[in-house]
Image (cartoon, rainbow, N blue to C red; front, top):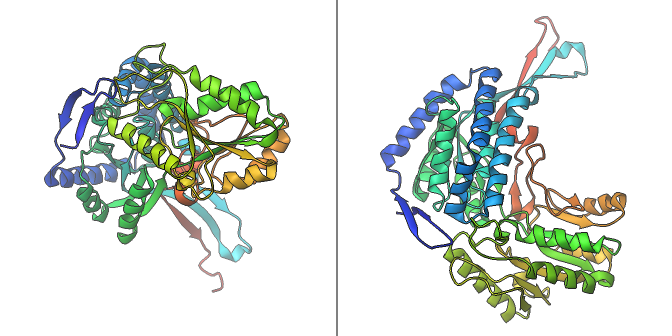
Length: 463
């Protein structure tokens, strides 16, 4: 049984769940399609009531929802509560804005004979969401809040190590008043995912996960002629220019790399520092990393969480060994992490040459790569020397110039003087190996709608 709750701090298996049967999968698709036939005609006000109710429940029961995140994937208690609030804010955003975002748009026409042209947005049908474990609630909210608000219905295949989080969100939506079948969790197998995508009633898939998983699901969706969005990995650049406030920049660097245990697709994985301030930054950054305290994620004093599993920790350690074998220097920082729990010692990699394959990897844990850039132009070159293109940041005292530098960095998101910012009212997505499509805002809610043209033409208009 692949689906299980295993506490990353104690390694204790708390609960196991059987895979869905093929019959259960077919029943879920049946229920989702029947729910869609009614939900698509529900008013925006009715949908908004459900979204707002979900937000209210999350806020009212924040502590219990947060506790489950700490239990299943080792998230710090403070970060778990922040994720619950972020998820609530996303539901509330669409409760407030969905109708406006999907309002019919009158199109300008070149000549009156073309008639009155209007673009309307209509839901597609049943959608499949495949989500990862690093933000068990936020990842779900980010896709279901907009798509349910648009009138679609959803099936969820969540990561195998957060099954109770998946069940909690299914119950959340039911308690919020969503009709039966409109959002269902499935403990689906890999082969069943393809079965779901091949069903003619399923109209698309949204995946957040690894490059490998994205490539497989995108291929299956493409073969089935189904719409897909892919939010994949990242190796975000943290560019430090010579005029940056070094004390504040180093603190943001420590946070940007190590929040959520470093298990964030948009965390600051590559520190790229211009030569004249490199040594100062490295000294301050190393000191900040050394002050992190690994331990029980439910303890408020803990500032570095364990990784989600021992397997994830072992994978990171192996990647560090490979990076060193190819010429990198690995410096372990801070007090030794506990023997108990899926911890990785915070590590700084330097001397990562262009011939070192690790230079182009994503390290999903507390591992930082530092690069010395000759100057600003070289920093931009290094930032763009990556197969990924998700996010990034630029630190400088001249914010206007920072925005100009940000334009030169080829990613879906760039922040000036902040490592990353995940909010309900900011779009999310990348380019190249980081995937395609956008989530949140109007961009997200319009990914899985039919952009239908309705044109009223005078019957006597010329051909």
